[in-house]
Length: 302
Figure 1 (cartoon, rainbow, N blue to C red):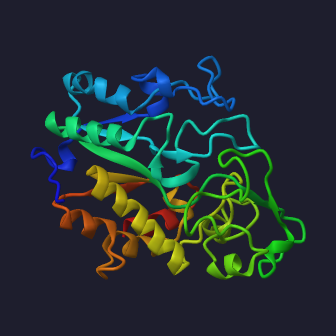
Figure 2 (figure 1 turned 180 degrees about the horizontal axis):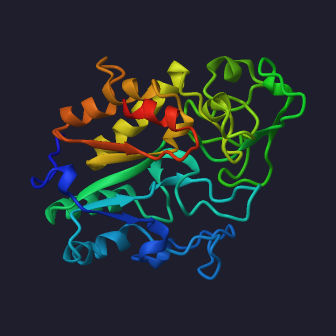
Figure 3 (figure 1 turned 180 degrees about the vertical axis):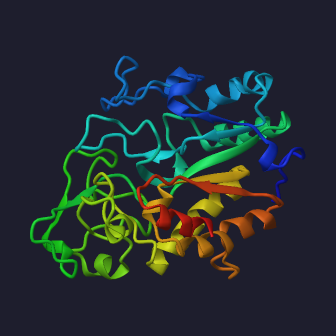
């Protein structure tokens, strides 16, 4: 089904309101706490109860303030508990399932309602997305690391949630292949299986190393690259979002984005081409970059 964004000002003229879903407004108290120690509104590390219904309820307020675009943090099902930090996955940047709405935020229907109501008010919706990493399900120790034999330094992290049991991996046909001790997983190369970045001025480390122990996706793998296009085409088709803000752009190779955005192969269609096919002519994509390496950042702007 083709969807069209509301007519109006170009992106250059729009005023964007940013919302961290969990911290904005609680529209449905029934989805606050799932009993895993992830919810505590008195603890800044935990979920606080904000959800998609809450954002929808406040759309008239946002419109009245003069905003005509909305940028929301990733609504996808997150890893709620990362055993390496007291912080819970309330922010959306630790994906467990890239194609499901996190239960704390509501349902797919809630998300569809948000976008539909925003469009009715002339507000465009930008979804924050992540292509650099998933949640934290394994670590790769740096001492005596051999990039040809990462399985020797690979270690499963106990205490993460979800999932409840094994395998400790994202719920995804490609990104569940996260154990290099399994030959098929190593051959798939969906992950870089690297230690944490220690030198942020080393371009090879920032491109292939692990950021804050979050499992680093190898976007140079055709399997991983094609899966990311599938994932984000899904949100355009199902929800009708008007744009993407891409998290941690600097930590992925520059040449990945040409295919991700513009691939014309019908089986591997880039997201901007797919959005146009869906009737969204001016699908807006921008990304995050913070670095000391200004020359490298400029490569993303050329």
